[in-house]
Image 1 (cartoon, rainbow, N blue to C red):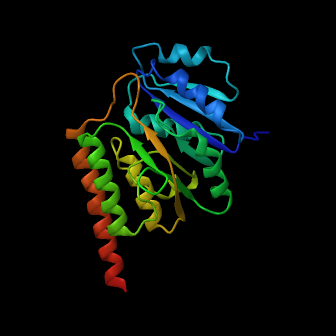
Image 2 (image 1 turned 30 degrees about the horizontal axis):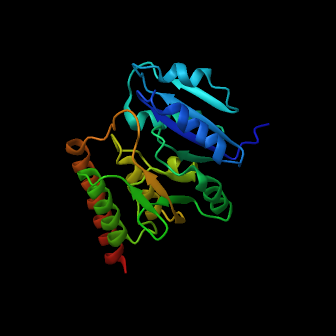
Image 3 (image 1 turned 120 degrees about the vertical axis):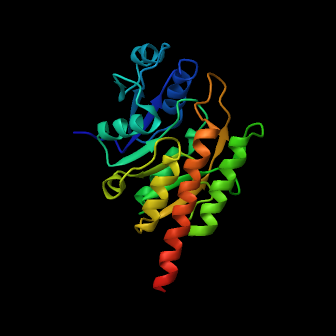
Length: 237
């Protein structure tokens, strides 16, 4: 009988420099029973070899036969999960694993999604200023103001949520904007969302896979979506 409470899903493409530290810290910090699924997205380095040799309870490695990208890798991991609650975690050791147990406690209290928020009191983003960091704040603030969604950090992928949400929406995203699509669609479907502060550290190893030129238009799509949905609600009231 599976007694794991939630599934941590980690998409990994060429993360040999950080994946072991990420997994070790998760194991050290998280006490609630959980499973970890690492989706090796056809890495050309030693990512899969490193994960395969680790003796961590309830750790599973899924190898994609060809490079599928961030979204498809996450969806593969979600489909392999054996629990009803999901938590995407990046392989770059940037997230604050200390709050994962509290995220689960909030889910148990009745929330459908718990967002780690860098942009509220107690939260922080520790990184050098960049176009990426500016745009992250801009998107999060814009969607929060437009929609009223109860998170100030919708662009953060570090969100725990009920798996059933995925059965209620059609995934359209092609990249990191998935972190905005899932919560904004869940919110307009009436799912209960909350946030807790988190501290995010910039990656120490390997290169970021975020491409500003590609991602910026994709994020604007979801700002537009939030505006249109808000207008629909306004017309009904």
